[in-house]
Image 1 (cartoon, rainbow, N blue to C red):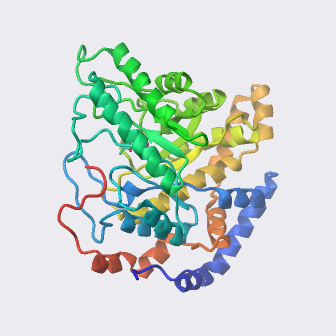
Image 2: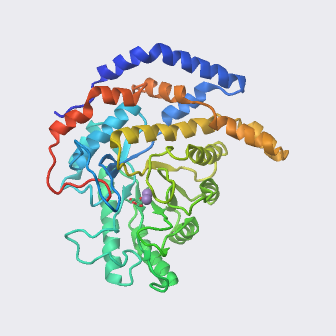
Image 3: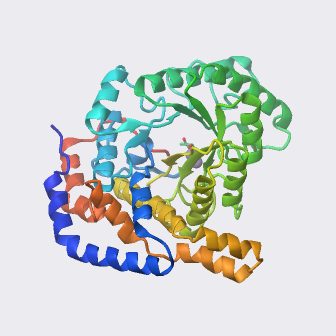
Length: 430
Ligand code: RM4
Ligand code: MN
Ligand code: MN
């Protein structure tokens, strides 16, 4: 049996921290009440909020220059699941993981599903990978996959996506996320029109393979690894593709995949309006697809996105059912610490958005009270909702202070003993 953080350790730490926590929670409740906002519905909503952990995120990531492996890294999907379970055990915010194939391929998927269930983890959207070549692969993706000029390469990429659906079915997943690296590096290198046409043709075959209760998430990205054009470059292209494919297709927003300074929350509002918001890959960025920890660089942006989500849910926007996933690369931190903190930052943005007085905001907007509206909106962001997050965790058996308990447990040191490095093991993205 491998090491898991004992419940007793969580309970003991919670016990010691409880008096101060109750004091803080009570003070916040009174403070919110003065603004006409009840704390309990926010705490209940945060408790019910979940975000999936990317299986590739529990390994140390890297840049195109280097990867510096961390100690005690998971050496395969079974160990990745253990780390995902640890994150959920302490935060109670991450009951599912989002697998990446073929990285997480195994021979027996019922064993994988059972092992995950025993650890209290389920499977969210399955991610396909046609942006790398695998050793057993017949044709190369160097010049593209689903949008390759050669039909045989496109067929190979379609077959991989169909296999991902099959594997996802065995794991209990209900969605396939497709991000393609296809694009071009030189003006004139490829036909901007034909590339999109053949992509749609290939994706129609993937779409035809979706079970009735499945969805396909189309993930756009403006650049990288292609640096002149990407085939699925932005939300407009993504929406065109989703509408061409059918009702089971929707648009996934990765927060790092936009042009600099783009108003992401407005994209979210538009996709909600179109009934095509698939969900999110949360992360943060300063420059591009930096894959930094959620809420670490621009927590206000995360709040702004969540305000649109809270608004859409309150309006009961038709077809609004986004999937929430983290998608980050942890190059210089312990990935478990980063993922715990990111799950909490996403919940923070949600709680802050819930702390906006929507009725007052609408009234100020309608009256063109510019500064009034801005202050009402900003008041949500400026609320320190930490006690709500802690209380939501405590009520579901998690830790008031996940990072503190994680560090005190010595989990990583135990994993260093249990997981001696194996040659050729690779986790994360270089
Ligand atoms: C891409 C994109 C995808 C992720 C890969 C690893 O930039 O964000 O979602 O699967 O990276
Ligand atoms: Mn992504
Ligand atoms: Mn990305």
